[in-house]
Length: 328
Image 1 (cartoon, rainbow, N blue to C red):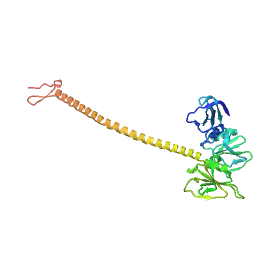
Image 2: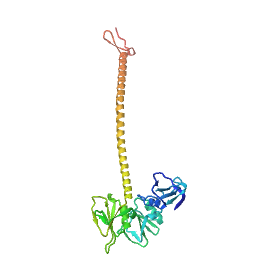
Image 3: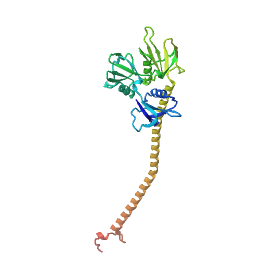
Image 4: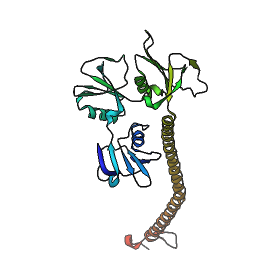
């Protein structure tokens, strides 16, 4: 879908400007090949002295997200173009979601917008979001197709020196399917950095080996192979992934640091308040006790003076209020 004479509004968060693009095709590639697979639309502008490319994670554009510009057109990405079809196949069992009615395009959008969806299955108007695709987890079906994300272009062939240390192996996958499995694999803290792919050779089935290492790891042992090739993440995508991890770690560390500082500051403030308030409280309490003692003493003295008097001869005489006549 194309929105003519319209440009996405850059907000540095959901919509950003991309430098280095020269034409519409390069701007489109920047969007569909984004590191996080979350680009939903882009604007391409042709001015007299320059071109502009804006990519966005927003798919539904309201008036506050887009502005009129006669030099620009805005394009909404068809999420289905991000997937590769595996025809007449269905999963044996899907735990991720219950099948629901949908068009093929909307099914692709649902999967693309879900962090847990790795692939999806479409059967005659019925959509099911699924996990990783493997040949073992699927069976033949005349009414269903499975769609996996296109990921092979995110890897670079390094040659026939393959990585020895692998953590997962699958059979009967093609190179695209092996790349999709590696690119989205993040189970058990194992991030797939490269994969060895061995195509069908004679009676031998194809092999897909996932590895946490790549040829660039100096301590990793390499093996020469005449039939297999190694694919590692393209440097640009790997750099983006590392930057995202650094930002996440820095954010988490920053939050921990802020919490620690907050507790320390609260403790210091509480200590200062107590240190300042305690002497004042003690002083007030002491003054109150002194006032109480003085008042008590004066009141007692007054009672004694009023209720009792001593005669000159030492005999006791009550006050006039309670006077009793004394016989002389």
